[in-house]
Length: 77
Image 1 (cartoon, rainbow, N blue to C red):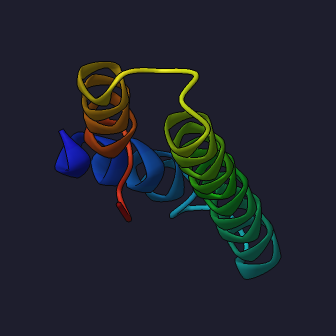
Image 2: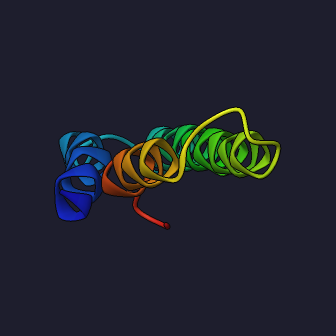
């Protein structure tokens, strides 16, 4: 699943191969920023999830299930 996200991030870059360097560079920067924002959100979700578990608001099973969901859709975690 992680490789799918990587491919999704790379495909738009390939479509700009015939454009000028400025356009391709701007597109790469935009894709990188979007990916970073997505991963930052995953980090925040994991931190909030851990906090909920430690405070006793969710069970260990719920914590593990939700943590695995976040990890499955993340390239980093």
